[in-house]
Amino acid sequence: MKNSQYIYLSMIVLSVLLTCTNRTTTSDSKKITIGFSIATDTFILERWNKDINIFSSTAKELGAEVILQLSAGGTKEQIDQINYLLKQNINVLVVIAHDMEMIAGVIKQAHDAGIPVIAYDRMIMNVPIDAYISFDNEEVGRLFGKALTEKVPKGRYLIVNGSVRDNNSFLVHNGLMDILQPYVNRGAIQIVQDIWLQEWSYDEALEKIGKVFDSTTDIDAISCGNDQIASAAIQILSERRMAGKVAVVGQDADLISCQRVVEGTQLMTVYKPIAKLASRAAKLAIALASREAFPYDTLTDNKSGAMIASYIEKPIAVYKNTIDETIIKDGFHSKDDIYRNVPLVK
Image (cartoon, rainbow, N blue to C red; front, side):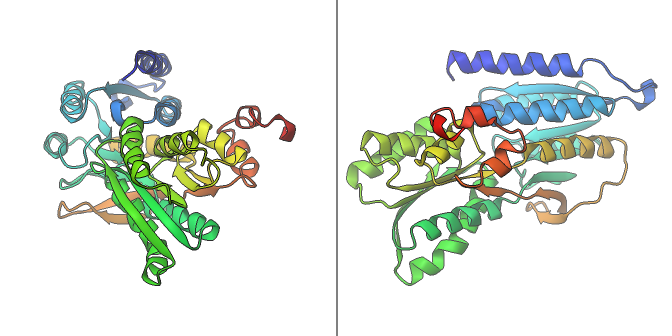
């Protein structure tokens, strides 16, 4: 990770500590401490900074304290961080998992100790947990497919999936193929390659997409697991003077991707209203810690033998002509920032 990223992470930690130090409940017996573990090395910092701040401020308003742990080295480090949190007398554990399966052991320890566990954004597999909160990831994939097939109903497609350690990657792929498969079956779409990444990594995506373009540039559309991967794809297209000529989609509504949508080099980004997700997750954490009912949206199978109470928010496809009424209207990014490189439309 670059030095600037470490500095940014330090700023996030400081912000959360300043936000969450004071507890506002009137009785010690009612104070709730939330342990929040995030594996930062594989995440888009822009996205997760928003989640952390909204979650923490909501928790504070409700009288809870958040102990944040940022594990910057992968699954082993995250396991160590969770073990640390379990020693801090936390009342509930919230986890954004680096690996959906490898942390099952430490999650079982928490669950067996009577500490409710929430999988935030990413499902944790093969172990009972108390709740899962995320966006509809299969719908994200369907939105990818609808955008691409409307723009390129016939052509050669490259699919670049996210991390194989993240169950969301497989859900997005399932949704994407729900849309693409009929086109493939009738020969309208040819999938050139279906790539899987080990991490949510710009560098890994750049390398693997680059190898595809070294062998062929006959590609009409690229489905990217997120906007970081889309940035790698557009970098390669730009080097070959193909940016804007190939339809590219991603998710997370990163600022640079929103800029590219209005500039015309990225077709669409999937916007996920993080404020709704993060604030709902904080309320859910407090309800579980207080042993209060919090009605779920659906039940999800995480291969643990138990169905997991799940809270699912709706993603939104954002195009050039809808960005003002979605991302800008919600205050996710400002109009000045998004249209920075196209001043005539301000």
